[in-house]
Structures are given as C-alpha cells and as structure tokens.
Length: 120
Length: 459
Image 1: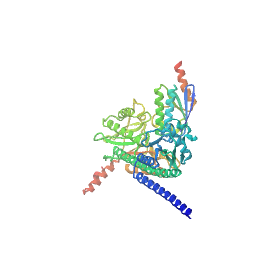
Image 2: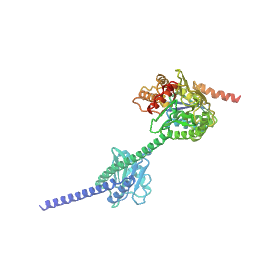
Image 3: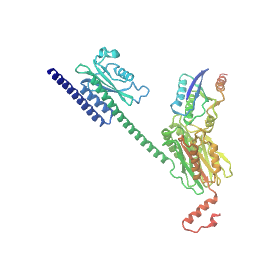
Image 4: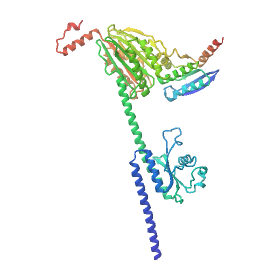
C-alpha cells in the first residue's frame, strides 16, 4: 500500500494504491492523518480509486482516521470508492458516517460548499 | 661431520618445539571446546572464551562482540561486549571501528604497532593505550555473527602468526557452538509460544458452545473453523427461559491472537447482556458502549443477535453491521435480515433498531461470517453470497447438520489447494415440519420396545 499526499486549499488529498489489508502498512495511513491534524489540516479526502479491496483491518484504519478527524473538528470524505469497498460500507452500515463521492473534485467541493455556507 | 650432527640436533629440537606447541594448541582447543560445548547459555560461553583466551594468549584484555540480530534496523551498531575483569575501557569508538572493518574485510587482523597504524589512527587518543591487537571474525556458514579480539600482549612482543591462526580456529569453533545454543534457545522459545497458543485455543473452544441443545421441533447446527489456531469469530446459543433462546454470530476485526482476545471480551460482554432478557437491540446498544470503551478506534465487531421463542416461533433480531443472514422460506423465497445498526465499538452512543419475523415450518435461518462468502479460489474468485444462497435453496430438504457439512465441504472444494484466509463460522436454525416431530417420537417408542402408535404420527 502506498500513500500520495497533496494539499489543496487546506484540504489534504491522500491517494492510496494497493489493497488495504491491515498490518503496519495500513497503520501508516492513520499516522499520516494524525500528522496532518498536528499541522492544522483537519479536512481530508482519501482517494480510493486504486483500492479494489479492503479487509476488516483496512476498514478499521479508515474508522480510526474518521474518528481522529472528527475529534479535531474536521471531516473525512472518501472519493472513487470501488463497488466492493462500497458494499462493505453498506453491510457494516458505516456508509452513514463516511461521505462518499464519485471524484476527488466533488469531495473537495463538498468541503468548500460547507465552508462557504458557514461564512454567509 | 660434527657440523652435520649439530644441524640435525637443531632440527630435531625445532621439530620438538613445534610438536610441543602443536600439542599445547590442541590441548587448549580441546579444553575450550569441551567446556563451551557443555554450556547452554551464550553469555556464559562468551565469558569462558574471553577468560581462557586472555590467560592462554597472555594479553591484557579480550572481548567478544556479537551482532545483535534482534535490532534489524541497525544490526551492526548494537554489539554485546564481554571482556575480562580488567576495568579498562577501550578507546572511544574502537569497538565500532573494529566491527566495521571486520564486516567489510571478513578476515583476521593482526596489529603489533597500533599507535602507528593508519587504519585506526584516531582511536588511540583517549582511554586505555593500546599497542597490539589481534582480531578475528566469528563466521558461521558464511554469516558473520561476531568478532573476537585480544588487546595488548603482556610480553610486548606482539602477536605471532601462529597465534593469529589459533585464534581464527577458536573463533570459528566458537561461532558454531554459539549458533547451536542460539538455535536451541530459539527452538525452546518457539515451543513455549506454541504451547501458549495451544492453551489459548483450548480456552477459546470453551467460549464457544460445545454442544447445542436439542429443542423439539427445531434443528440447530453451528460450527466455527478458525483460519489460525485461534480466531476472531464468535457464535453462541444461550437458553434464556424454558422457551426462549438467545443466539448470535459475530466477527471481530483483525485475525489471530489480538482478534481472539477481543472475541473473548465480546463473549463475556454479550453473555452478560443476553441474560438480562432485554430486547436484542437494547442488548446490542449496551454491549456496543462497553466494547467501545474496551477497544481502540480501529477495532470493531460485527454481530447478529436474535432471540428465538419456541412457543410463538417468533424471532426478534438486531443486526449490528454483520453480513445479512439469509431467511429461506418454505415457499422458496429468500429474505435478508438487515435491520439493526452499524458495527459495534465505533461510536459509543448509538441507537439500534430491531425487527421480528415468524419461523414457519421448514423455514431456515442461516447466519455466516465473511470467511465463508469471501473464500477465494485459485482464480481469486470469491465463493460469494449468490453461490451460498443457491447451494442452500438446492439442498433445503437436508437437515441443519447435513446442510452445514455441505456448505463447509463446498467452500473447501472452492478454495482447494489454498490456505484458509479467514475464520469461517456458520449457524443454522431450521424449523421442522410438524409431521417430522411425530415420526421422531414414533422412532423413540420403537427403540424402547413399544408398539408404534401410527395414529399419533399422523396427527
């Protein structure tokens, strides 16, 4: 599993490639999110375009990231969720906590829209 | 003539000295080998080697530095050092420089004019003054495991070539013995670990129902097959009253020992809740809060919990993010049981919903863990829910126990030749036909030597 990081208007976009099957590899994703929070970035989009499959440990790490960002007053959005990953979110009924979007741009737009609404 | 005799005599004398030295060397090697081979601790062996070498070679200090294999990130920096009783410290960084040189050159090093040696020039400035040293690598099967070094020959003559050869033999002999002891220790550690895992497996087996009660009019079957010795799946069947039974099947995130520990926690938490006779959703709500408090944010549990009432044949259930169980109706239709809420352990205060249905004669409820539906074959195809559903529909005339065997056999056939990747658990409740109950009763009477009363069996 590899993580690529990009910051756009104070929102971090983390692109993951490879399957999320737990182990120390997956844990680095949570560490990454924690370091972003420490640097004041509380909104994160995780791009799952290149993730075809995740197991319970992989899902657990997404849950950790969600929890850490929520605690920091931010949010986590998922983009390009594969069908299999989406069905796992449906079965576990976690889909109500994870906002999913068809593209990174749409996920980003949802952050900006919220910001815009809170300003006006 | 006389000159020739003297010459021969001299030759004999030299030969005699050489032989005596060889015998001494052999005696020393033999003594060292015998002593260390009967020792079972690496520390002790190193101590003996250093002690005996310091004495035999008449030097001020000796040291064995072993590569520390547990520090994989920087194995060459962490060395275990043993020296004799003289409390003199080596010059700053000489240990590291010596081992660094050894790792690079892997051959013995003899220096009799240390202060003027260009390779270690900067080390002699502080600490104990060194004039001579003899250092040899300890190599075992091509792998360097340490360095044996002697410092400062007492007679100031420096180390001879013979001594260099002898120390090399000692080093290679010792490397062999040290490796053997390490292997033996590792084997013992492994055996201890295996024994612990075996005990954990025994404990976990006791947390699962050993035999399911027989309930008139119902067939109940359940099995857990962990991928490793211990697993994270859990199922249970608990009598609540004379006609109510709690049953559940859950899956803890992760695998192996950590999952097994959380599974034990889930079992204890849930059993405590089930016995309060509360509705399934209330039990799950309370258990969710407890599991949230007992785990970190990346751990969670999926669980289906139901209560069967054998008088009304009604099942009340709550599904906390578990793979939706199948309800196979006798008319051939299938329903998925999805009412409940998210996985447990994620958010502490959550409301869960519940639903109920009636289990009619020949209806069959099948709960499974994802180890079954997600079992791969060699082409990386999942066994899949559709295949599971179809298999049960095709064989729904079978008893719960037969059907369970069939599912496990079919899944194992699907994943043939591949190791089991995830824990597999299956739980089946089948309501019998009214007629079948009577037939069973008739059979029992026959066994007891009574005349069968066929009029009973038809009513």
